[in-house]
Image: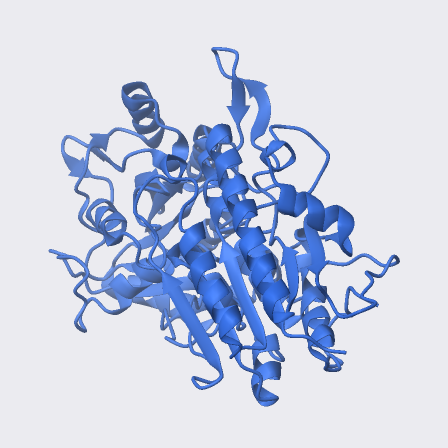
Length: 528
């Protein structure tokens, strides 16, 4: 027997009995509890080596998670991909690196590095920056500047000074009469530069003002900037206002004609917009008034969008993902449907299709995006769950599609705020919507697969306590396994009891329920 399949990703909902501010464990979630007790179910791995990251100490994330879900295989990803390139020296032999260095030398300019300053291994790793700084000195460059984006999301929420001090120590060890490196600007990742999916271009504009023009509140050092802004507003790192480093009103390092700029983040979603600004600045860019358009050489750590070829220059070749689930289904004439709100729309489309912005077939693939609200997620933790469900139920009941997928961002996006009470509501909002989709599957006799792409809302407290005795919030992802349940599957559906399964095993499971034989390139199905 075969059935159409509805796949639901509850973003950031880990499944563990460990209680460290576990908003999943304590949420009222009768649907999920039913799915994980009364229906075929298990937990699957969503971090570390299961999604192509260097080790099982590395947290999974939505991008590598949806790559694995959508292609049924494990590719070297993110930090692992860059680690391999740095260790082999291939990164410094790339055309982009050589061009960046040559451009600076030819114009007597500066080399700039922009990126997230942490070891969170989700968007970036400080070790990659440190390695490249060392190489700039070996290459004989004279002036280097670093523009730091503060994390507090994939690492503890007020850990910025740890990384600033580490970077300053490295800079001090490199600087001499022939080489001068300095931090030039910075700010919180949720305030400047790192917007995604064009949700708020004003963030990128703020970054442009600080990094390129040197316009902003000025401080003598990054440490002094962070300490002063924390004292003024009580900000955690990810929300710290932007700042410029300088002395007597003179910025430490604007981006000028003859300079090279490297964005050292390896994750794509929050790197695309800044890349557009640099690559398109002289070809009709209209998202904000740049005021200054320096003649620079720009490169990304990776090519963040393979279809847009963005950026044009990049240091490390991305994984070439082949044999995706979408391509498999298109080749068999299967109609599919994908839906989420803006915050995770790229995950069920671009990342799902193996880092492709375009569909494999306009006729067979339907994508629907629901615009996200521009509002702090803790203020509206239900986000667009109702609207996503409305579209999903309508698509199921249309009978037009044999495979449908959606992503509910709540557990992740609200979880990242560190607000435990709001995250409870976010998880409960998603659970409430599951019943509507279950009912639609009952009506149409569809099979429903429910899972998550990584943990987050299952671990909302960090080590230690705040001065007032309250638990210290944890805003990063967790290492928890994620739920996997099969609702209304074909008669006799059973989950395999032996073997360790991860996100990459889901694709084979989908096509098996649809009635096809999975391709040899994929990992095995989770069901017997």
